[in-house]
Length: 392
Ligand code: ATP
Ligand code: MG
Image (cartoon, rainbow, N blue to C red):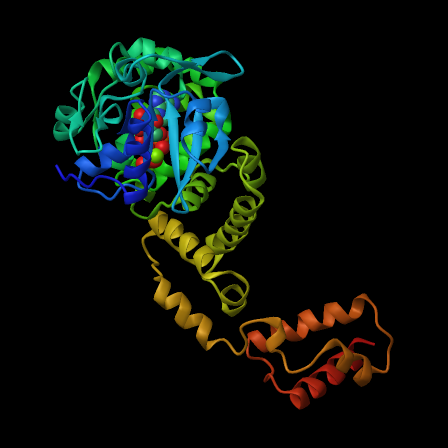
């Protein structure tokens, strides 16, 4: 294994903690990913120092997650997370850290063996629960007794599904068995935590694997409102991304976008995306997209709706490049490209401003997009005067 694990700044944090007399090692997902040959995103350090001791060692710190025992250390401007050895105690409505004396006790209460690996600053792997062997055999296995791990934090049931997708790993039999028996306790987990794992699941290497295990533990039966879609999302797996996962759920379950957004507490941005998907899909079910659709919907909406539709009908496939090509061929790309303004309409009609103005801008915009009128002030004026006089 490489001796230069982590960034220079994160190694310095470990060394300074050690120089102050504390234990400190790298831990968790970063070690796992490094062993898999992947570049870790966020690096976690675990230490015997308490949060207040960590704050004494470093000049610049931020109390980001002090309630979980985590302090953010700013080293050469780089934020490094340092967490005190701990286990998580979960009550029905709160999680709080219980500090423990040794690295072993900390690792003992992590979720899976592959996530319970640690590494010293010199690049020596600390593998107390055979996590390396499980990594090599591509197995997700709870640390110690699975029942106990899932009882400590039922979210881990869903995390196992997430990792089966992200890493494309099997779930070990006893672990899977406990997931099935402990599943009802997932009801007590905050939906925000589940949603975070869902996003990662959708973006994993093999979401179908997670859907399969979800069915094995009877997730759709026990949580029909949230997870009925696990019965039939497989065919969409080649193109699921965070948001696209929820778009596919929309279609397979017939759950309205607003309802899905409410159930999973989606952000306003995600909700808007989903509502647009819903609207565009409703159109696409009846007919191919026309110029107006290519004009009003962003490329990613057209892309995901096209793909979801294609997964069901197999007579239509549209690539991102094709969508961009269609968009380029439109006479205008946005309203501000129109070669007239509301003021022109007032002048041409001699009327005063009112709701009619925006209605007519929209009408003209459509006519231009469909190619019925050229985007040219004179042509628009002529068309407008003609139409408005017919309306009287
Ligand atoms: P990712 O690559 O998605 O960040 P990760 O393994 O780093 O995956 P995190 O959610 O960032 O996952 O958590 C970091 C580490 O903390 C995990 O590797 C695991 O050791 C531990 N951990 C996180 N959440 C839990 C949990 N609910 N129960 C037990 N251990 C957990
Ligand atoms: Mg992480």
